[in-house]
Length: 356
Image (cartoon, rainbow, N blue to C red):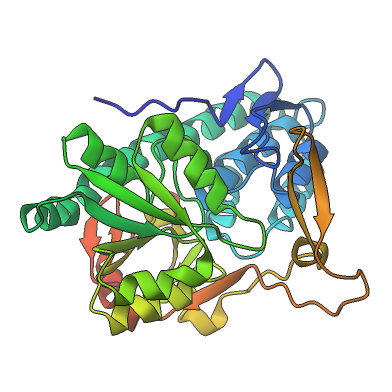
């Protein structure tokens, strides 16, 4: 049975798109209508839209929106440049923009607007199918673990790489949903993922899907791995270098180290478009540095269920806020893509044209 998102993350609405506003989750489920290039760029930068695959899909639609009244060469170039500058680490963004450029730049301006919508929709459909394939391949290690256990397979994840981050079943969570569909009992250990607490998005979507789960503090992960309370770790990725080094939300590297030390398998689930074959190693992956206020304050609701920000430290406090870290290939047991599970050190076998 094909996976269906409980809430759609992105839909077309005439000459606009409607997105799920992820800044308001998990307390408020709300949508936002984007009708311009500028609105799409703000949505990606501000993380109304987040998750590497969904960022790429949204950017593709942003190009289409930009060409509504002017589809000339200068406007196309401006749209591509504007969107490329929104998030530096997630390579799916640049993959989708390269695909839009290849489809549109040779066309007459009169043909570009309709072609842009068609190509963006094709990228979205492709993401849905890719997520389904990742789920089918990624469930295999869970099936093997289930055969050796009497209880549920205990899966640890980090950040959010589920259906909120895609237009399908997700990446790291796609095998979880496939396991549920196959009748394999699972229990997901969800780390909160500070400073933006994106693990709360994972908790929210697992609750929507009826998947058993437990929210844990980031700093509890090492203890749980050491106590043999985790069977497997699966995370997503925002960029994977040609040598298998993988960039994901800050804190992933620590989980990989703890998993390696305690002989717990560690997998990265991501589409082929996340592999940057032009990036030789993790040392070349640009790491986004985000605003200090994400560390100095925290979003939540009060006792009256009213949303707000709570200041954690004085605004004058010096802050470093790298959004991602890099897990070396040697710590990764396998990369789960739509083409199967590949050793992290053997990605060359997956090389294909970037627009395929």
